[in-house]
Length: 113
Image 1 (cartoon, rainbow, N blue to C red):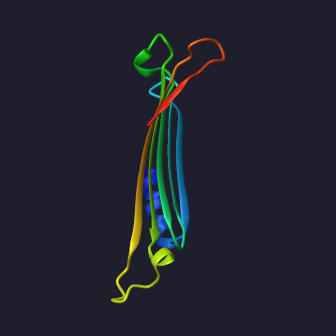
Image 2 (cartoon, one colour):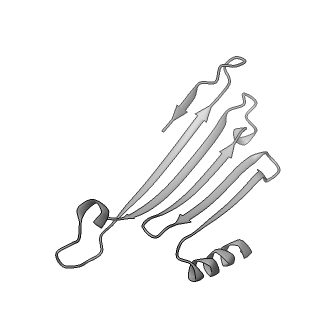
């Protein structure tokens, strides 16, 4: 909560800012969580990245990575000014899931969506 409040305060004082939080041993199971936000004069990006190296304690060593990203860019960069002076923005949400498992030593096939 303190980190979030610091971000809000810094955002009010400076419209261009960045914030990042990282936890390398989530729940004591070597799971990783990364959260970041970057806000510039023109665009902004918010990203969450979660890694679980052993899904549910899988004895085969299946790992999972989940990535969620949201970006916003003013549409005037791509489409010019609007005739009615309305603001146009382009929002993109990207979600990715990746699974991998060692079949043999040094052989790690991956499946991504």
